[in-house]
Length: 295
Length: 315
Image (cartoon, rainbow over all chains, first blue to last red; front, side, top):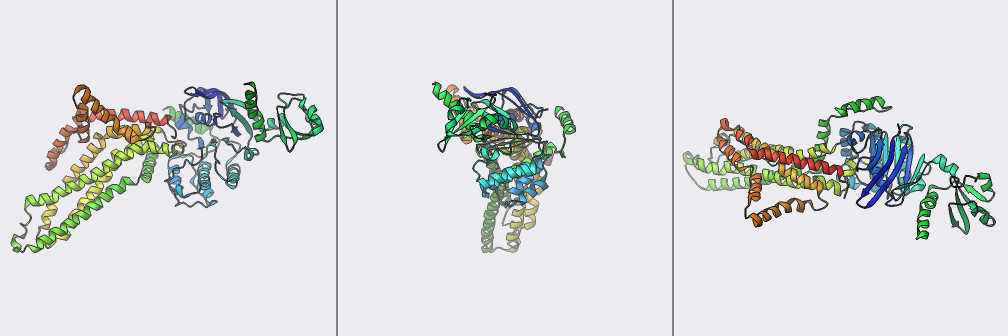
């Protein structure tokens, strides 16, 4: 049973179409990064998965319809939706008491252990904590819940690089095992590169690209082309070209041009696997450029 | 039933995880505690009212004492200084006043609490945190309803009881040796009867008869895009005005008055019965149509509030 399965997922707010027929399949034990520009529909998709919003089309999360069976689903699903949603009036000890009181899968000792590694005091009110500490607290609460699916919507927005790194390290080392599934959206894609097992680009309510990280490595090639080989390289139909320090960097998609092989490419310049950020600009940014040219 | 079977299937499928069972009652208990943590006015406001009232009462007693001290009358006559009527005026009326003040405070706290209950969590975005936990919208709304219709009445009853007892102790201590018959203060107070009537009043009027008021406020608070206060109080006002203009009647206003007054007739009955334990059981109250219609209306408002909360996100 896949953890999340969606077919033709649609959602419209009035005349604005937020999700335009999304197909999605996330197997158990994967870490999926959903990347998209602002307003692409990421949060709407997550809200549908979490049963926070009604939708059209077919969607099953852990075998359940999230909208109809939300209450049961929430025992197995955790989410950090946006930063800073912890109630500011609450004390740290109260959040522990409350979650322990209502959640059947919460392990209080584990949460206390995680908090002990931070400088957060039990008697503090959440309003007294820094943004980074609130994120640490929320993560500690969520990681102490033995859930099967964890959804993170921009969990590190506004945190400095140290906290961001610590956040993902902690998530990987102390939480993730092969039986859990994590779905994460973020704009800070560079830091996620080494964590993800799967990648999905969403733009204007559609899935633009969906592949595993292994596929990404075998399918996309980025080449910094030697100046004398530029013409030859362009003949291989790159999907994107940019200039770095006066040299052309070309990105090839073997899905578009399967005849390309690494050896052939190596002859024209330095070859590497593109970063998610560069790939995103190439795949999503390109569409805007093409659209702009067409108009 | 479906829930039950799902839960069983699921636990057999579950590869890891030692889930405790958390009953609905437990979730309710923690949800109510959460409300009290957040809204400390629930107990602070009635306590403060009681403390201020006691302070005023003590000042009054001291004044009375000095007044009694200056009037040099024979000891034999002194216990008559405060005649029965006077004593009633002095003490009984003040017991009632203390209860009324604490009740009034609790009502105001309840109104403002209800207006903010489902609006505040959307405004500060914490609704996203609450919704990430396995607590249903129904339990959440019911826990928020429990504050004005159960917790506040019970709490204010307890506070009133303690206040009235403190009044007795205070008056005994201050008036001791001033010639007032202290024993009669205690016997006149008829603590047990009065407190029963009081508890009855708190539970029936504040708990049941006001339920549609709190239901309305919670519904508005779940719905309002902003300014729940205006959305809650403007419509009744407009309806009263329209009715007056269109039909030159004021049934709606009368209805509201009756509701706020605790259902006039039924309560007057129980006021009279205060003296007689035998007629305390108020079958009148529970057979009034107003009560049951009110409860039905309250249930409808709450059902809408539960449904609204399901669709609502942060604002």
